[in-house]
Image (cartoon, rainbow, N blue to C red; front, side, top):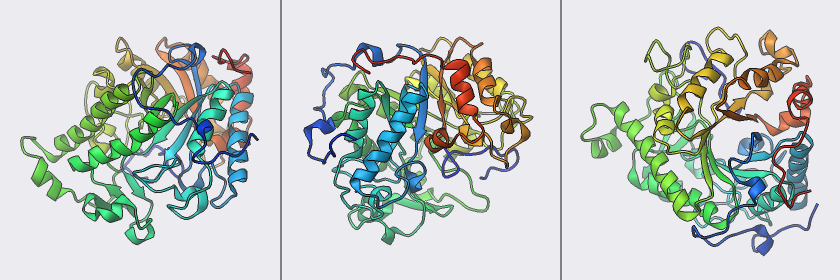
Length: 425
């Protein structure tokens, strides 16, 4: 999701102030697992109104912490500032990246502490970031969606740079290098089980409102490189007509199984995914969108996002529609219309991922230099009854807002606060 994450569109080949909490504090909101746990307050429960969200990225210190190695107090102060800024912008949800590179922002029994906190993967930061985030977000009437990346292990290919106890070092046969990064191999059943266990640990322990994934499944294609899963395909691909079909089935299984397990742990927790917005182009498949995408999630990431909606495996989908109105290859309006039609009658909520990071960036097309472009997005989307909200990428751009685009959105569309908690401020 990102300059270090969120993908820009490619039309040709794909390319691309409370007391400090410790891990043991009861106030950090660890919870006992079980579906009988009371749900969130009514005003914070899913379906209570439009979603207004912001992504807070932690991979490579994208949004937070501003740098690795800040003191625990400094990290907490920055996090609370992001939450307060969300409230000031009349947002009602934060999507916090809590598993950036197969490491954790909570005391996980499965994976080491995240490198983005201290600069050393596996080093205890002296507090519980996820527990604090949940507590402080809810105190402000904000939903907390915990954002996990299932398969990314590292933004490099050197396993010796991982913590000595890292599961990817303990089980090197589960990892593949590709495009200068390390990934867990999605074709291995033991990988699929492990990554679910690692993510779902947080679901059972914290009062999160949703499990959230972004657009990384099989990695984005890199020209001239091969994702070498031939051995896994030979072992597990019998009965599939092609390796592509087998890969899609691997991701389908991950989505379906995770959905079932989330509800088995806590029925009130939602499961949402924020994919690259082009499922397939209409020229490839008549069911696809009127786009000319250099990336199609079905074909290139083996992510059948349309199927997940039609099968009702997920509670919401937040496609990253990161292009301007009138874009010749991927028009914002046409994609909103396609996704509105896709979710119709499924019970799956639709939120639009918005490219706040492009606003005022001189490297972007002229439309993004107009502070009103983003507000026009919300005007257009308001004409589609299935659009239930918007999520902005990302928190540091909420803070900077160089062109005033978010301020314009707030003035035009967020004049009142949405969905305050009944016991909130």
